[in-house]
Image (cartoon, rainbow, N blue to C red; front, side, top):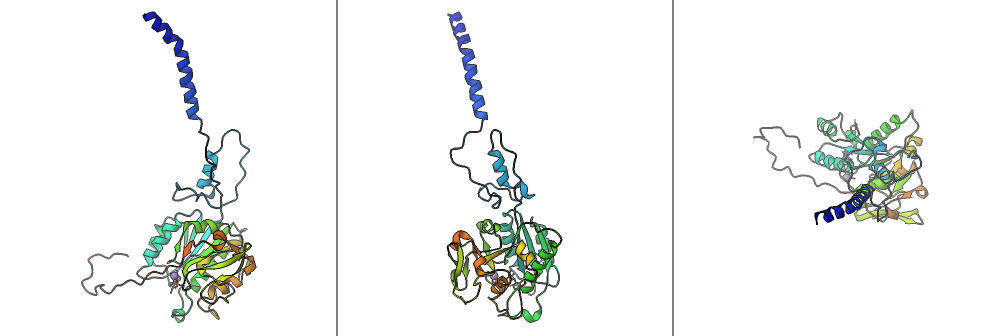
Length: 329
Ligand code: UDP
Ligand code: MN
């Protein structure tokens, strides 16, 4: 009896081993994917996925490229050098007020999720404030901290805001790139109180000259937008002065670095510029309506909102019996 069992065991043993080895080899091979892999464009920097590192180092460490590498199996042709990811330069004018740090915190939380973004923060002040300096140092973002005060005579209701600050940002950009061949880059004006979706940055990253898109909660309407026919801007859906050549809010366009550099005189003007005309007066200097590149699904999606923060109520701030510690807010 025993010898029969032994002989059966030894007959089966090689077969069992073969099955175990085959199973092991199979689990080491990556399983073929059932669904098509998403296409990771370098211009979206892997924004399509949910599992994304918070900060990226060099352009070629983008998660999109990693995903492409993992996707390879078998012999592959040598990797093509990929075009560098255009840097997004965000120019943000900002001024001291009780909500300033809250606004900048929200903005930094958004920007930190965008690959290859350089934040140009321009304080409306005679000097860099400690609050903003400390904030930027801890923000974990590539940034440049500038300042320029708005002359007192221009600090009046009804006059355009942040003209000098946006121009200071433009001057810095031009100076920084004056000696080298322009790296791919895109500039946009990011006021500190607006709300920006991450999708907006994917859209603007592919700007060739000047791109445009709708803006929510602006101009006394739920949204304003460029009207598009056959892929071209043909007019403006706006509740205010539709006769403006570019009836668009500051948050509704981006400009390539190349266009900024090849139009060195294009700036925001104080003289002869009313509030609400600043955008139009600036864009007139660098482009034409025919040239505009519509983004956000032919300007049918709102990806940025012209939100405005309520003035805070500080009626109960004490004049005497102050708190025993000094706290930055
Ligand atoms: N701003 C500034 N100095 C000022 C007023 C505004 O630098 O005296 C900045 C502000 O922080 C914001 C941008 O300019 O980034 C636009 O200002 P605001 O949001 O008040 O304008 P609105 O939304 O009403 O057009
Ligand atoms: Mn605003």
